Image (cartoon, rainbow, N blue to C red; front, side):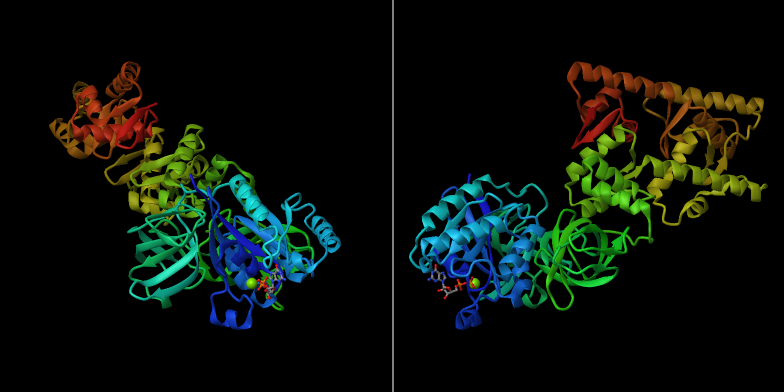
Length: 633
Ligand SMILES: Nc1nc2c(ncn2[C@@H]2O[C@H](COP(=O)(O)OP(=O)(O)O)[C@@H](O)[C@H]2O)c(=O)[nH]1
Ligand SMILES: [Mg+2]
């Protein structure tokens, strides 16, 4: 198994970063005409090195202070930093700034490389080494190897390669199972092929012929070809420098900082909540400060609003909402850098906590609590908080976009939360979840509105469903609304007749004829068992008019003698109790997995009944859907 790792250079201008990359890889990373002419790195350069079981991609950054923004576009993708310091100059301003940036970006590993060792004597080299040891004290580079090399004589390069391979093998691999994200740092036209974009694939995999989307432009495309490590590949995976040949996209439509991702998974954002840390060298950050915001390969102008504080002191940190002048794609956990608006210097950075943040009211304690959970919580706590943040229920697509997690992870975590009675599924098709607190609030609100209606409309039988929904909340999802009504009916709080919702407990004495009709309805369903007859047939056969028959049916449902499984399908409670026994017997005899065909045999029903019954058992927690099968719980 070959491991893919990205090494990034960092350090002051003229300290030998580009020369080092060339000495290691044979490729001079400066590719622009101007760079060659002026002999300095202006933009990012790339190279590859095969270290046997490690494939190293290099991102060589410019050291000049004027080009730090280009440095930042490349720094986001690095796994391991090579902090390059010239033996004859030691630590200089951009040594510090680049090093701070690496710390703020959460780079976990690195090597310190003293270049130009041929220019100094052993004593000077020893001194520089001491300075560097002290410099990295207390940081992720503390205790990291400090290696002296010369790109001119080749001294120390073999040992550097050995250390690079070692540290690459020890570094945590990027996650290839997650959704793919390729922040684009370069786009160009290749004669005969069209638009090519390049970047460091920071998660997931990309495959030739795959449909992809360019964000935030939302432009769709297809991968015509992929290059990595200098040759064509069918698949590129996280941790690889990747060049992608795209169909249907003009090079002019692509900007550095855009992200290539699978279609329809992510949503770009103009407002995000984050933990922001300020460097101790920075000035106090005031409320609503304008800054330059760098995330991935993207750069924006942004306004920082502190949450729970009115200023941020040097060296401190706080929650903040960041509003961008134009959208970009970011996900929770992404690191960013902020630079002062003018003069432009790096002042801090942070971690995105909520990439799709709503506007907040000033001094909203709930927001701080929510962000603390996103920052420190485990998966279940985070998902619970995210679901609970929406009063009307969230669907799967929203959750994927907001968390960046895979649908399978979300389903699994949601199931645990639902078992723990923290959230509930209001619908499986589409998949919609709501927190139990929010559901209870909606039930209370619905009941209140029904009562209100009765007190002001004493002659009306009840309130129309659509009106009730609008009174609870115009934005209430129809699926959530249905679940609210179902629960209130089940709890015997309301009665639904056709389209009308009314308060329960208005006991209507039944006439003889009505009692008989009610018994007849109950008996017909009991006899039918799991092959429930059509509602209209049953109601049409009794000796009272249809409206009355429906009311009788509602009473039976309220008394839990009959159970409504769908809007059109009602079962006798004894039949459903028997179904529960059948399922547990089946599990004992054949195991927990239950294909639909087996369920049809078991229950003695056709597809018409099987699907609603299974959805009912899913809802009530007897079974859980797993692909085409059910798992008996
Ligand atoms: N003597 C000596 N000169 C070097 C060495 N590495 C780089 N240089 C020179 O230092 C200058 C700056 O190197 P460059 O790689 O462009 O620095 P960068 O700005 O950090 O990328 C160039 O003139 C190089 O030839 C080295 O190991 N020894
Ligand atoms: Mg350079």
